[in-house]
Image 1 (cartoon, rainbow, N blue to C red):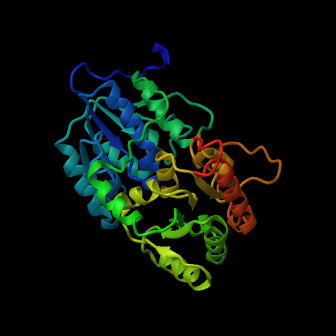
Image 2: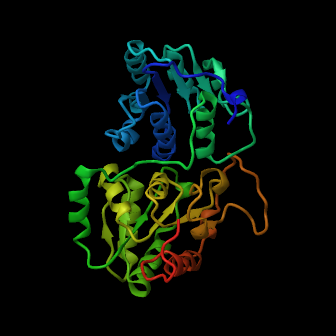
Length: 358
């Protein structure tokens, strides 16, 4: 980072920083390294984050999040009225507009700040650039995590290897210990569904994987996620078809899910928030990806040897892009998944001679 990269500097005393990122859990996880680097550089900074209630439940209590303004989109236009009222009394020195949809642009327009830093016009979709005063330089496509870190460069904030500090936090350790004590073998959480059906894997194949995890790898399958109709339907199908014991922890809530994932020997997940939570916790994860681009939203710099890439065709050098490819998840076979579990056993499991690697 050079001085020429710096677009705006934080004030010398107690900078007030607003974050507009109202998206889902995975994006919230990607914001955390921005905040930990910012606080390491400026411990006196006060960070206010506008985000949805679900993601808010994950980051509330994080030492780098001083204040949360919830944007509950289920309230429709009332959510915008509430956000405008809340932000009217919270002036900022800089606002980071990390989300590139029109609704986020409206919320950015409600903020009061001399610097509203957003993406360049090419990346600011839905005319989002209209709501910002400053923009980071245009760049070729990158992983979402790297895109967010560009904002630190624009502020002159140094950063190195990302740090999430997702937990579990000290007051959550007792629950985690009690939960894990209920199993007589290491657990392998399985994320049964996502926010989009196109990103999901087939429940009947998950059932086969559950049987193999139990019988061949000595792992206890534990179904995790929320309690949406699709998740409950997947849970019912998996438990019906599996011939070995399958435990469910659906609906535990995001903070308890941190404890579950942190205590896992191995996690298996499609592209969804818990995948990125697992990476942040540095736990091995088998990633099943076909609908979304792994180079853009896959596991960040970790466990790529456990990634199943059904997004690209064999030998395809596809670019980093926001293009989605429907119908690809069904290409992933049970054998594909179990091959990655075999690789986990050889490289990352406690019995691996070389020990776990990050």
